[in-house]
Picture 1: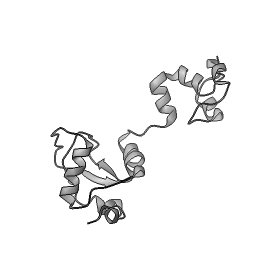
Picture 2: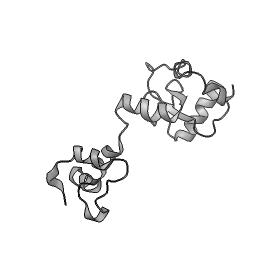
Picture 3: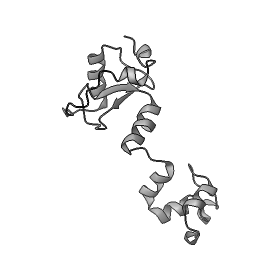
Picture 4: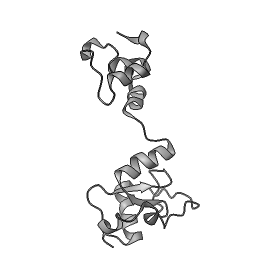
Length: 137
């Protein structure tokens, strides 16, 4: 089957082959090799563009074809990420990277170096609701 036709199926139809009761198989390698396993298993053409290899088991090292499916950005990053708690907002990434107080400063809570402007990914109004007023610089 042509991968462009396969990806037009519903997510449920693309996941019919999944058997999550089977264990993960970690043979080594990376997503490029795992993509080849799924191409072979589903007998589809190799994907180009924005068709992603998705792990229904949420184990990026897994190469079990019964855990892999073809998906879109939305399915892989948002739907599956939220399901497993892996999806983070720009604010959450900022707090994780810089810590809460520094994230508040970087995201528009009076940071003079940033010209008092809100940082990328979060509005000043939103950052003010997330950060206590006592953290102004």
